[in-house]
Amino acid sequence: MCIRDRPEAIARVPEELARRHGVLPFKVEQGRVYVATANPVDAVALAELTESCGAIGLMVAARPSIERSLDRTYNALDHADAAIAAFGLMDDSADFEAASTRAAVDESSPIVKVVNQIIVQGVRKRASDIHIEALEHAVRVRYRIDGALTEAIQLPSKMSSPIASRIKVLADLNIVERRRPQDGQFSTEVDGRPIDIRTSVVNTIHGEKVVLRLLDKTRSLIGLEQLGMPDDLVQRYLSVVDVPVGMFLCTGPTGSGKTTSLYATLTEIQDDTRNVVTIEDPVEYEFAGINQMQVHEAGGFTFADGLRGTLRQDPDVILVGEIRDAETARIAMQSALTGHLVLSSLHAVDAVSALHRFIDMGMEPFLVASAVNGIMGQRLLRRVCDACKEPITPDPAQAAMVERVLGTKADQWMQGVGCTQCNHTGYLGRIGVYELLRVNDEIRTLISERGSHHALHEAAARDGMRTMQSEGFALVNAGVTTFEEVQRTVYAPLDEMVFDETVSSKKHRSTEATTNGTVPAGETNPADADEQDKVGAAR
Image (cartoon, rainbow, N blue to C red; front, side, top):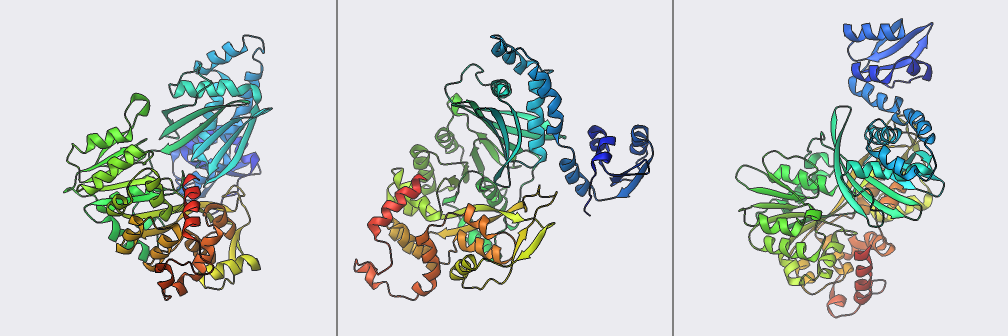
């Protein structure tokens, strides 16, 4: 049920009262305030609503629908105006800096209220990150929702330093240090939910920029079937990770769901007969029955330190949150080669590029070939909003590209026109797209011989790997996402697009030309491909 709220009804019911009793005001008619509720026989709620609003009317609706609408209806930033006005009354004299610093620690100060409201609204909007940016004439606050940044509010420029100072206080950072980047962490509670917040502060030409990563501790762990993988891919995936030794990697940019995939993997393979240890920065999910360690680099405890300590704890499965440096890569690889199953993530453009990334870190190719069992590249695509989607006729050029990649004609696609449920973006929620590279004998040989990106890609395709681009285009044809979203999110250079188009025919082609050292027309020279690989690894 879609509940359409009206401003006059919202003004009559205070937010605290609406949230406490789970009611949503949606209209005023003949002096009576009508509210949606999931519990129309709640006598306490009815009494308080009547006392606050006078005559009331009721409509029954599902609790989840009401809660979603409450988050859209009551914008925490709407209450920021009074705090901003109060802050504006502060003296702009030479003592302003000292006064704003004192305000950062005073829980009753306007700046504390503004920061709290920014965080509360970010959580309610399902933001993964909050960006607070010092511009020349303003402070811009943006939320990353479903992978895309959306501006929430602009504040006066003189609030930049006090906001940064307040966040430094919360994260226990050095409040006077403004030259060097600082990272920290703190916890809070929003609407009864515990939220962990990772903090990054860097200096820019107009002031300090703050980025907050929001981690909802109430999120439950999910299994592979909930990641959006096709059934056949799930079976291929399990064939790689359900082994006692070796290394499995998830690759992708920040925010692409790598940690979620690794935890989903643990839900499939963890049992009481295995000692499972994780080393993370930070611990994003609490997983019952396993041993979780948190990296603290400022205190001298790194991923490499955690790995060395873990190897003395008789582990069967080791999850390393991220391989960031050569030392961690070396120890993780040695662990995989000495009888342990190692799960980890790595920043790389795609699955094949992760192999070159390891080699660029100084790992010997034959060790990479021996240790790595498989690599999964992944991205998260925004879903078309179900509430406002409508069919569209594909652009001919776009449809032709999809047809070349998939070999399937596109008749009709879907597009969101924008509504209150999706904040007028046309998208609501995300779905994963994946490519799974299984390291078979052919690929091990190519790795040992420092094979090119193109050669490894071809070998993976012969083993059944489908690219993230082709998986994304399949979702476009199914009406789940849009062509623009696939192009925005999935890295797909032109040579890979051509490769996808022709891979089926290449499966049946002779490889004689390649083995003789010649390069067939239209294909990439291995020397050129190697250069491209270095560029890809650096991205």
